Image (cartoon, rainbow, N blue to C red; front, side, top):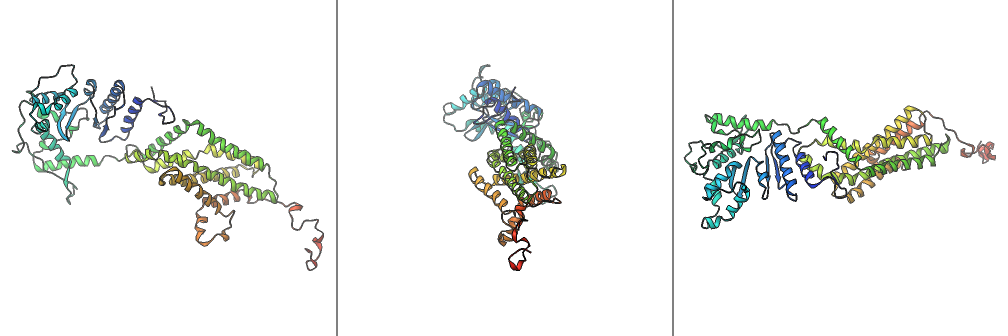
Length: 493
C-alpha cells in the first residue's frame, strides 16, 4: 500500500511510523546479514503497528537463513507466539534462554508456582515472578539465573560458545584453533534437575531443533564428533563456511544500477529543486545568448566569443557547489550503509555524480546559448561543445563531492568549494597568462580543469576560421592621413 509513497523527512510528509519501521526492517535484510539485531523496534507504535512490525520480521525470517534477535518491553501474547526462542535477563545474567514453548515449564519448576491461566501473557507472568524473587526465596539473589545454570540448556549454550569463540591463533594450515569442548561425560557438568522440563524427556535436544534455518541453536554441536580430530575439523568447517560468504550480496553493476535508480527517484521526488535547476540554466543561456546575439566574425566578435566561453565555464563549474549541502545531508546514511556493505564506494560515488551531472541540463543550456550566440554551425562542433561542458561539470562535481565528504559541515564546505572552483577558473590562462603565473603556483594552472576546457573550446571555435577587422579595428585605420607618410617623418609607411 505504501510502495509508491515518499518516505519523507522533517520537512516533507511521508509514510506512517509503522510503515517506516517495516521499511527499516526490510532494508536491513537487503545485504543478507548473518544476524539481525533490533533494539525495541516497536517503541512509540500502537498495538496494531507493533504486531505488524514483528509479523514482518517473522515473515522475512521464514524466507531467509538469518537469525533475528529482538529486544522488547512487555510484548503482547500474540507477538511472543511468533518467536522461536526467549532470552530473559536478570541483572546482567541469563535467567532463561531456550524455546518459548518451554519457558512456562522452566519458571514453574524454578519457582514452585502454579501454572498461569491460558489467556495470560507468558512474559508478564515471568516478569511478575522475577519481581517477587526476594520475597519468595527469602532474599536469595539471582535465583533464576543460578537455577538456569544447572540445566542442560545452559550447558549446551556453553558448548556452542566454545565452538564459535577462538582461543588463540596457531600457525596451522587451517588458521584457527578453538577451545576444547566438554564431552557429555564431563564430571564437572551438573546434572539437569528432572523437574525442569516437567517430564519432557527431549529437553536435552530442544536447543538443537531447527526452524527453517532461523534458529540460533541450529549450528552443529561438537558432541556428535567421535574424536578430537573430528571435532577440530567440524570447527574448521563452520568457520570456513562463514568466511566463504561474499562480502557484498550483489554485483558491482547491480549496485550501480540500484543506486542510480535511487538517486533518480530522489530527484523526481523533489520537483521544485529540479524546476529551479532547469530555470537557472535556461535563464543564464537566454541572458548570454541575447547579450551576444549573432556575433560577427570580426575582431570584436572573436574577443567576445572568447570571453563568453570563459564565463560559461565558470557558470558550469560554480553550479556544482550547490551539491555540497545536499551531499553532506546524505553523508550519515552513506556511512551507515557503507559500513553494512550495501554497496561498494566506487559504484555509489559514480552513480551519485552521474545523476547529479544531468545531461539534459547541459543539453538545454548548450542548445539555447550556442545557436543564439552564433558559434560554428556544424554538428561536429556542437557535439564537441556539449561534451566539453559535460566533462567539465563532471570534474567539478567530483571536486565538490570530495569536499563534502571531508568537511564537518555545510558552512565550511561552501567556504572551501566556491573559492576553490573560482581559483581554478582564474588561474586557467584567460585572465592571467601562463607566463605571468608565479612559479610556486604554476601547478594550479596545469591541474585546473578550466584550462583544458577553455583550450578545447577555443580550438573547436577558432581553428580554421577566418575573422576580419573593420576599418575602426585596424591600427592604423585605412583613412589615417599618415598611413602613407614615411616612418622617419612620423607616418606608418
